[in-house]
Length: 69
Length: 407
Image 1 (cartoon, rainbow over the protein chains, first blue to last red):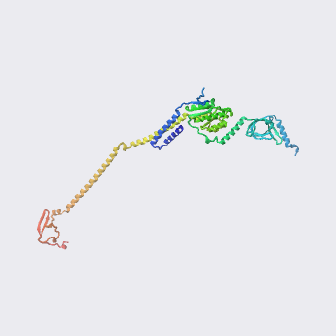
Image 2: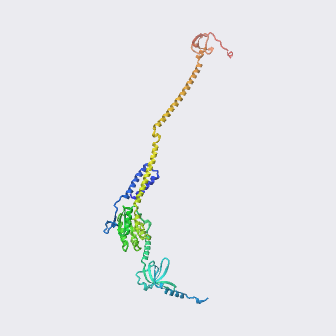
C-alpha cells in the first residue's frame, strides 16, 4: 500500500459516502476502512524514519553528509 | 543624346573597386558568422560564404593563407575571420579576402547542441512516451551534482523544509570541465543500484560553457537509460540543455527541482485531514438520518401503546355484541306479537268457542261427524256435542231442507 493509492482509496470512499445511497452496514464498513486509510496516510507523513542525508564516498560507502559548516 | 555621359561597365567596377580599396574601414574587417557553400578548389583555394540570420557575403581564402589552418572548414561551422574587402571586377561582386580564420567556440557549441538535439530527438530520446512518472511521495532521493556549491545546499534545504522525513543520497560529480560529462553519466549509472525513488541531476547557473556537460550525449544516454525517474535542474532559467529534454521533468533551478520532487508535507497533512473530516461528517450524517428514521418508527403508537390496539378491538367487539342483542331482541318481540295474533285467530276459529256460543255438532256413536241427513239412519243413536259434554239421542226422523227454498 502506497501513500498515493491510500489517498485515492480514501477519496473514493468519501465520494461514495457523500453520494448517499449506501446501505448502513456498507457505510460502516467503508467508514472503518476509511479510518484505517486515513491513519495510514497520516502515519506515512509524520512517522520519521531517521531523516538523513548521505553521500556516496569514493570508497563506495555511504557516509553522513551535511551542507552546514 | 550625349554619348559622352556614358561610362563602360568596366569603368564603373574599376571606380567602385578603387573606392572600396581606399576605404580604411574595409582594409581590416573582423566578422563573425557561419560558413556556407564551402568549396575546396582543386588549386587549394577556399571559396565560401559567411552568413548570419539576415545576410550573406562571399569570401575567399587563398591557398597561401589557408595552408596553416588547424581545422578543416565546413558548412555550418561558426567562424571568426579577419581580412579585407575588395571587388572582383569580372563579376562586379565584392568579397572578403580572408587572411585569418578561427573557429568560433561558442558558436560551434550551439551548432553541436542543435545537431545533437536533432539526432537524439530523431532517435526518440525526448519522446513523451518514454517519460517516467515522478512519484508523489518519495522517501529517498538521489542527487547527482557537485558536493560543494549552491545547488546541493539549495536542494537539501528545500527538501528539509518541505518534508523532513525524506532521505537523500548525494552522488558527487564534477559539474564542469572536460571530465564532468563522464562523471555525471557514471554517477547516474551508480545511482541505479540504490533504492531511490527519484534522481535530481543539475548544477547552479553559469555560462553556456560551464553548463556544457549537461549537453553531452553520454549524459543524455545515462538519463535515458535510468530506471529511476530523473529531474533535470541545470540552473539556467531560459536555456534548455540536452539533459532537460531527455529528463522526465525539467526544473528551472535546483531549488525548483527539490520543490517538484518533494511535496510540502504540511499541505499533504492538511489534505488528508480534510478528507478525514469529510469522512466523519459523512458517516455522522448517515447515522443521524438512520437514527431519525428509527426514532420515528419507535415513536409510532403501535409500539408505544400496544394496549390501545386491544382497546379498540374490544370496543368494536362490544359494539357488535350490542347490535347483535338489539337485532335479536327486536326479532323476538316481532315473533311474539305474531304468535299472539295467531293465537287470537286460532281462538276465533276454534269450534270450542262456537260451542260456547251455543252451537253444537253431532257425531255418530262411533265418532264420525254428521254433516248430512244421509249420514244417519232413523233409529240410530247419535251424540250431540255441546259446551259441557254430549247428549246421546236417537234419530226419530229427518226433514231435508229444500235447496231451492234455502236460497
